[in-house]
Amino acid sequence: MSLKDRNLLHRTRPKRIALVIANPATSSTTGWPVGFWWSELTHAWLAFHEQGYAVDLFSPDGGRCVADALSDPRDASGYAADDLVSMGFIATPALASLIEATRPAEAIAPEDFDAIFVAGGQAPMFTFAEATALQAKFSAFLESGKVAAALCHGTAILRYAMRSNGEPVVRGRTVTGFANVEEDFADEAVWSMGALPRGTHVMPWRIEDSLKALGANYVQAGLWRGFAVRDANLITGQQNFSGFETAQAVIAALGA
Image (cartoon, rainbow, N blue to C red; front, side):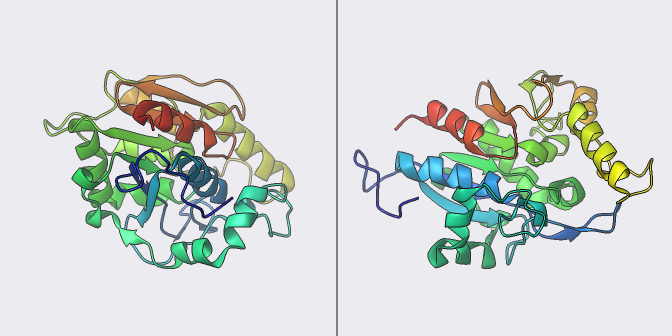
């Protein structure tokens, strides 16, 4: 990852991305601390930076954000030990410091950005119901014709974002997100390890079921498959814990 300006075509007016990560919380189902997912921030950041885009970091409430432990390549579990992109971000003080003082979603001015990009992690499933400013901003991007993107559990925003007429923004749209088959796998994994009693779910609700209930055409590609779906100016991603595919879809929609 380089911090050099890659924007050779539009140095004075680069495309601008409002990248949103979740604030830290405590899971209401497991009691575990939850947060954003490192690679869904860092892989997207790298893709946008290499394209010459300017990226500003936000969270629903602003302030310091904390990542899910398993997404940290330094975590003792070794779950994300091969995520060299996140390791590079974390080891770069100018970048790592950005999560210490994110700006609140209410400060996002849609007219100043070309796209909004909502990363995942476990926290969105527990916090986005109350993130009314983020819900309104996400809807404003869509209704103004600008690109609005969300991925993995960040697609929880689609359960709450409403059009100005009160209808869900996902009604009648083709979308994806963290799939039931992946939730099933995660539940079985923690049960098998004895981390949770069988029958206690990791997540309090399911994205796939909720979006279908709201009238969306939900699609998915199977277990741990990273891909993105574009429906007009709404882009959603089902990710293998990376923001790359969804970021590339945003880049394709915006151009240089």
